[in-house]
Length: 508
Image 1 (cartoon, rainbow, N blue to C red):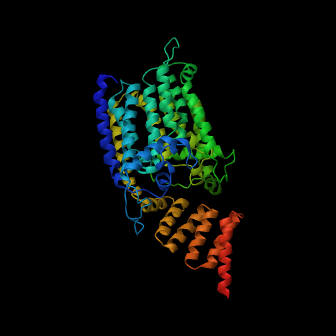
Image 2 (cartoon, rainbow, N blue to C red; image 1 turned 120 degrees about the horizontal axis):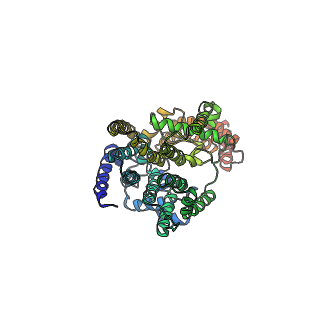
């Protein structure tokens, strides 16, 4: 790093830590939430034997770098807290202190803001540094970042984002080959290693080499073929990562409305959603309920799916007039989201195709393309003022959004205020009430969840709660519903036999 930039680097670190702490610092004192946190941190065998993180996939994913970080935090976060006797005090993991995990997310997020600033300054050192700085701060404070920062499980997003931005910073220093075609093998190996760490934190980062090629072509004016050849170690890593992901990640159990012809329409709807939340991030929630079943049964997909195709046609007609850097930024935004738009089905898609955390890296790639565009406007003071207003608005909105993540109850209540029929919100609220021995409240939420996400195991859960209350006819009703969905389920069949026996005894 040039000597004159060391003071900028230090100032960027201090400012990033200050602003991240100011807006997101309260998250340090938030609890875990009862969605994936328990599975990843308590039930995960890698937390007890770290070598398992590298030897075996877990929950249909191979993320050894993430599990290694969690394993280190797990070792220092041992605690004994009360389970809680109300929905407001309930904690899903009383044996762990959540503060170290939240601190890791905050520090990584602050580091990512610094990395983005350094990337922007390296790309365009002549651009006003206040514009580069404000773009980095906008990345830090955008309301879409609340979810990946405040949710412990979303470490995979901020950690993979860290390695992806580090990869970007290392790449833009200088070309990987000189004018004679001699390649810098050491840098190529270093880039491949950082890229591997990004992919082992989240496999969807395999798209990064595509962005690097486009960026290198625009920045250095080198032929695409040479740039692609220079990145051959990254293509090799990407191929292996994709093969591993295909081997360990099965398709979702619920493949309704996921026919090949429907997937581009689902992806188009998701892209419209992200663009809307980019410019107007209100309201935000963990679950938006926009799964393929909802989109086609409600007809919502037909009001949005045509917009990206219209936009693509407009781009094709105007591509020679548009700023190449703007095109790069928009391409980066789409590219970062591409693996999670629904073109390839994934597990969380049965709940919702879209999620705030999926846009984490996309925001950074978008801002890489915006800096040259803003510099070219020729009014640095006006641009700076406009960015400052945006930063202030985003910071205030993120601060207002953050308390929703205080604990499981506040999270799901907030989710229901945004998506009233959220199946996962009702399901996890029911789980809390069930843990607290509140069977009637649990049944009400489980039944509401079933309306949105009908599952045989959920019917069995409701039936057991009815038996706890001595409501045998109701239990039989829900067991029959479950068997209609899964006729050969041995547990449902066994429980139905028990319920029938109880009903016969009660008759006599």
